[in-house]
Length: 267
Image (cartoon, rainbow, N blue to C red; front, side):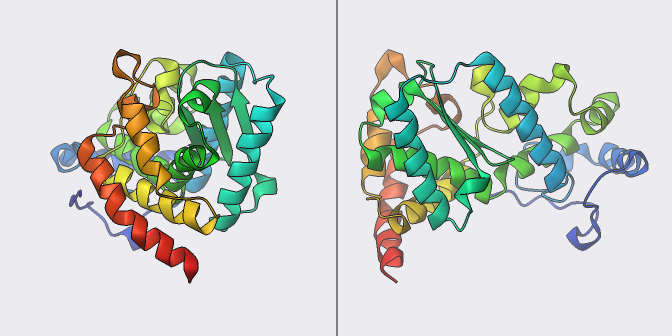
């Protein structure tokens, strides 16, 4: 887990960034860039929720332009119902969310800030049961609930100082940054740029997803079978494993979490 410290206290950190604040931050970061290098769990206070949500909405719009929506009505309904149950279990209002299945062969799924859930048809060939598909979607919702997108964007903002930092902060809609932003939000593989989540973030999303599954009435034990199936694809490794690695030790960690998730759902 990252133990980096910022040159200011969270209580005094800005919620949003004006040009003056951005320049002030720039001066602070250039004095100690090494302190934040390689650290993604450091600064959920640098970039506002509103900014990250707008980045998610912009990325979703670009994905909608790139990928056709699936014509498989059954798949759309299946994904939508699983997402609905998981969102209710997570304390969310499903009517505020948009859920889409895309006609793409890659095995991938993602949840974006701005309440957007996307599942590619290729994932449905690997996640063969509703429980396995719930494991994928629950894991992705877990990333969003744990504020991982905001952590990653904030950490990148700290790492990238100079003119590029100013451009990133003040011109977030610039197409030049579309791939980088998509990677930070967890869907960079669709734009040809991969940015894996950190191990701590992966395990946190796994845990939240398992608890969500159990509370929604799905069997969290099938999460193990899902990750095994994806890990056994050989040369046809699913796209989701480019950003969500599933080594054996992670599967073992999930197995340890499952009894607690099941017990919590009974409470």
